Image (cartoon, rainbow over all chains, first blue to last red):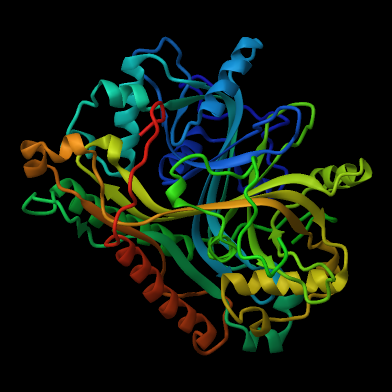
Length: 272
Length: 272
């Protein structure tokens, strides 16, 4: 998983068993799904003696810290890192493990695919899952770099347009998790509806059921000025971001609605 | 957690330790977050001897099957239920457990809250987490009912406007998971930006940094007709849904951007 690799290795843990033709291990695809998802769902097991996971919403980005000798991309995560979570990560390292076992999931819905029969209904979507081991970022330079990376992932250039750098108390209180990735996979569905052959032969069904795609995308509304704002106008880094992203996102969702459908290869015994 | 309860009990496993003033155990709030989230993130531990969870995207709805003597709301989940997942659920039951330990997370982003300094940046969001034990729905009536519930959660009245009922092969191949909930919690952040007192005293910062909220909502685009559609017009159940939802969603996100900010009560040692 060095940076010169273009695919993640297929392992038992990350092999996508369903719809293989939609599965991807392409590094660029997986990273772009993670990077463009505003909330990542991060899962871990709070009590290693009980196989009950918990899921926390966090903000994250793939990153390669320039100061690091390590050439593998990491996933940097920001969110509520409780003392319990920190203790778990510390305990794992003391046990000789590379960190806290963690799974990160990113999913984007691009459309509702409406077909002839409920069982063929689908979403156009992009999803990625990373598994690996998480540690707390201790190095001050790396932490500062990750804070900037994550802030600018929400709104580009936001970091440098605010009161920075973080002061000592802010540096101390901010906790960033770094995931070293042991496995990753993605799945992408795009395209027009596809139905089973049995329904495509039904004239009555074809005549009566509307089939198509409702595009879905995360829309950015008009920026709303806050109560203590004194800046005279909404700055370019905000308006440019909103305009550009809305155009790109709408285009992606609408384009996806018109692409060829993936070929169905459902194995016997698998659900539709 | 019977239906006449209005809050989920606070237990150690589901107690929200951060931003308690934003935490909720209100059943209606938690159910509405789950029900309005198009993709739920479902986590479980594939190998109980290793505390490494996996997360799968699924579609789900809270439901109370009319034929059931049980008065507790369940979370019905539809997605790729692998043979491995089924075997895990079966194995858990054979061990005398109530099902496979499962965590379901739902998160909606309602806005990007831009403040004076990166550390005070936030999202307006709604999130819910359910923990419990999952079983496969075996009863044919309950499965059919859940299929209808889940289809209509994506687009209301869609089920009855398609070729139904599912035939024998479709019934057989569809797998629905039912989560019996042992704990649940939610978190909601809405409102204008809020900054630390130290930055609110900085005239230079207040004069130069724009503060406000970018509303975010999942927009439904114009329905795109599929290649084999023969229905003459986009049906009312689709156009009504798109129009009504877009208006509601935009209004929620914009309204949330103008509500009072939650009061900050960050404990020492916690991240910002």
